[in-house]
Image 1 (cartoon, rainbow, N blue to C red):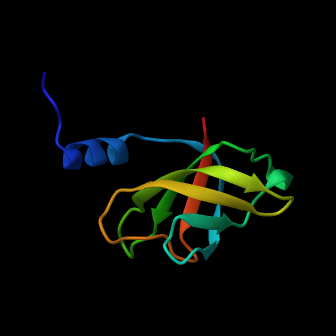
Image 2: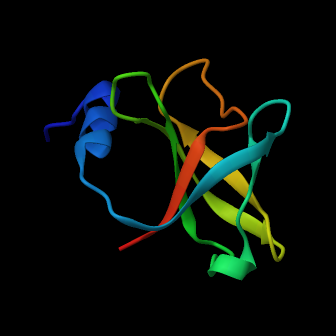
Image 3: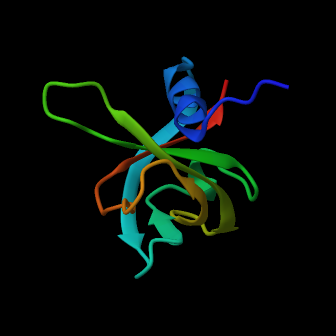
Length: 104
């Protein structure tokens, strides 16, 4: 059985073209970066359990896909996302990072 190394899996995931229904920003991050509050909620159609991808803008480069998670709690105008995985060691979400959800 051939197994791809961890780095290859990350690169493959990042290179897949993804189209999303929702986009917004990270509003707040827990101390260890496990939980993130995003600035959208029930008012735009997000729902509990929805998968969320996180991107960081780079100057003069395309956005870097650096984490994924799912919506844990919702209110009208915000949601709490639990990060399932960071793709880069020693990297956590920051206020202002972009989230995208609702893959089409």
